Length: 163
Image (spheres, rainbow, N blue to C red):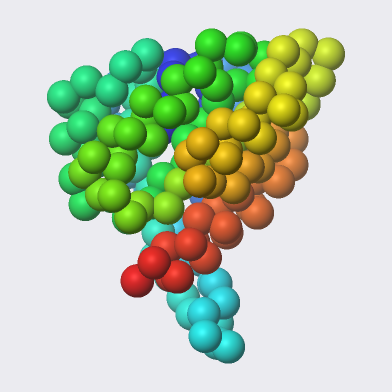
């Protein structure tokens, strides 16, 4: 989850298909994708089928978006390193998720790591928000693919631990 144009769809596309498109097309509603991930659990490796719900971005979590959260097992909250206002919205997204599923693990993804010269969100801001959310933090780039696999694998690991 996250505001408009932070790269949610691009992150999912990079993880599922290992590709990136420069062209921005706003998501309407929700798009569901599935991927099998191998993840460690109790000294074993298990196969986990992850259903990823790519929900259209918005500045606020409205009733439609809340309806998509029913049954959520965990979430990746995405902000844009080049837009300060996006990090400020992470707490509201976390509250919306935890209002429905209090134990759902959250992972904070700070996207657009490839745009370092345009970066306005610093490490301290990110660490403060991650600490408030009780989540880990991943600096990622959907464009280059940097750290995207690790982001989703951590979510998979947290989902298995939460069962």
